[in-house]
Amino acid sequence: MVLSLPDGTLSGEEPSHPNDVARSGDFPRSAAVLARMRSENFPVASRILPRGLRRHLRALYGFFRVVDFAGDEAPGNRYALLDLLEVDLRRAYQGAARIPILRQLTGTVTECGIPFDVLVKLIEANRQDQQVRRYQTFEDLLDYCALSANPVGEAVLHVFGRAEPALIELSDRICSALQLLEHCQDIAEDHRQGRVYLPTDDLRLFGCTEEDLVATRAPTRLRGLVKYEVDRARRMLEAGAPLVGRLSGTARIAVAGYVAGGRATAAAFAAAHHDPLGHGVRPSKRRTFAEWGRLFAMGGAW
Image 1 (cartoon, rainbow, N blue to C red):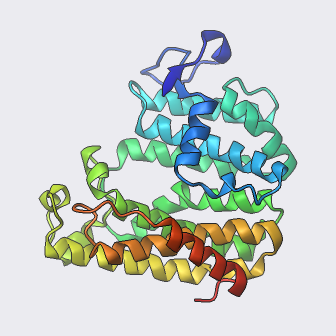
Image 2 (cartoon, rainbow, N blue to C red; image 1 turned 120 degrees about the horizontal axis):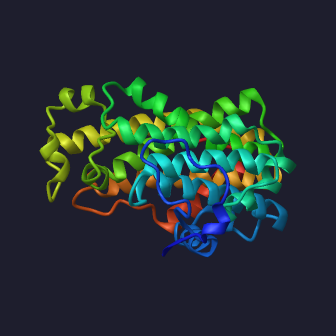
């Protein structure tokens, strides 16, 4: 459930956008965000991780979720809500955030040394979503993933104290792959919002039309395209999987969970004959945990 914040919570600077919204804004409350986190089986909910790490990862998840809400679900002027979030993110780095979920982020960015430039990319990605509805090439889509997905992995590496350039590069491959898999899962839902994350060049290559994206079942040509995109995402995921072997302890447990979820999602596509329109393509818990254990034991080897 989404509720308005009290006016006093967000008093201060106004978002500098020509079509402003009420200062109270509309954001999910912390309890609703954490409830969604549990429903998504987000790896940070695992009791295996120490309490301090779970606190930091939950704070990050809360920020990720509230930014996505502002860009994808909020009624009214989303630009103004995103402007408001950027202002309050800056305040979080000064210990003065006014939105409760961003107040919870202050300790995390301070203790873990997460740069502002990393987290603000997620806000920029959601601004881009308001303007860009199609991506011509796969490279264009990867540029979007560099804003919408890769900062998540980089922030998580900061939490574990392993935000090293070589590891960030591996993390970027994993995060982009997971984003591409999610786009393939959500083809119909994205189209209802007027967005298509399948590259236009690839749609043309397989002879697909946008009408195919809202069919009751995916026609053969669309299933071929989805398989093509899933296979490409899986190769990227495996190219990043050696990151697991470069980590140890709780960092290895958490990152193995992300890769395991991606592998299980790719398997779910195969089981559904690459038809995300006629089937709800979701990874099974059994396959996810099996992949998780295999990754942890073998360090990312396939």
